[in-house]
Length: 639
Image (cartoon, rainbow, N blue to C red; front, side, top):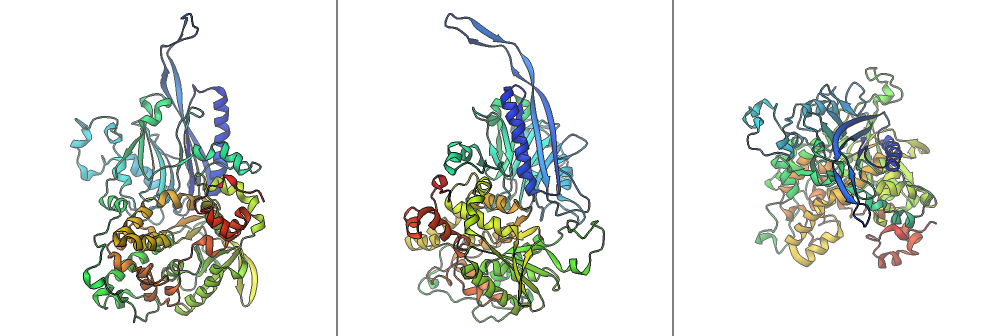
């Protein structure tokens, strides 16, 4: 996980704005530093451009005119980056620059597509490959394709591949800004699902700068929530929609920069399919209409899932084989090749690890003991040596009595039955409700531009869980513990793809299978705005990287190949019909108890929602009457 930022300003701006700009850059760096604790850097580019020329305007009613002569000014690009290095054998410091004056700031992971060797850092490889991309203006929408010299080049040479074509080959989460020096084009964007945060401030009357950042600067803790809303800070920033964008900086003045921004289409059929999120089989054939279909795995008795065994079963399990294989590969990608030089006891990344260090996994799992996190834990168990310990991070605001704490304890017991040699370390993280008001200023800056009570509750739970400071019980002794893992596996995307929300059942009841599919499609297409940016910012604030195995491109593709009536059968009661397909995957993994657990969102399972409702509305009933899920925070009480 890294923090990236860009400030595009002009030397023609008033001095006061320039002073404010310098302060903002410092504030941005301070926020970005929490995301990338290993290295921090800044790189400035000054570009001459003509900003004013022979402007005449009336000064007085008598018609006297003022003429402003042509003058050269500078467009200033300030690249900011902090790095949490999880790959590569040599430490890097962003912004990265090459011999051709190209500049890259990058936050993400390449899990497939461009070849990254185990000892290489993906950001450095991406800069090299982006530097080879064609710099013709036609690729940025700045010129006609007619007569473009790159069109007659040999495509298989890969020398003249465009930036959008190259970025479309990446599988994995990313957000980046790339300055292509030869063309004077600024490229920026987020991956097709928006798994990495990137906020944007478009130039406006009060602030003419273009600003990109992984996170907004910290809020003034002393200000009330209503004062923050009145300041307009939640409108100042926007979540940048997923996609690839370009601006031809050399084409004119900064005040017109927003009008020159071009959004580019993805150049990969698989990514285009993910955007559309459509499946072929939505409504079941007649033989499925009258009775709920029997589970393909009802009689299956397996411990650790063995695909060679599963593949010998009847044809009804073929989709289970495909999806389970894609999930296993997704988890493997996200738990392997994590650089270990950050460990305090390792003086060099080439130094041998001690036996104790070798037993510590570099990743943890956000863990409620529910269906989604249990599946991730069971599959992660297959991905790393059995003598390694795995940290399971559980957050509760009601001590040992919160539903998620109860299911987490039970979940560890069930995991121990399918993997007896594994050391499962349940990290019990207890949130203190009385301390939450003190955190609101910081947490509001992390969830911004999101601004509902639900956003704050979820963000708070994720932020405290990612901190990893809690209690573990070993040999009947409960002691304080701090999780050092810098990668956290999160189950986001499972509910959206497998009909896990209560509203899915409502849509099915009101409009049948097609209505259910439309609601799930809508959930997936707005996941970047409603969930992923916020979650990324809250987890990354501790120098941790969130990874989402259920949102791997291949996992999504494999789930879309499954008929909707096999994904979920909402004719069955909660805990059975919702996420039916994942429940069958859990059975394949030997998780009989987890396979029957009902869906429970983190804000309810951890009990933070109930605490928030009492504090801000007086009771859960009053909160429900106020539609707390979508209620905006401007009336948040400072108690």
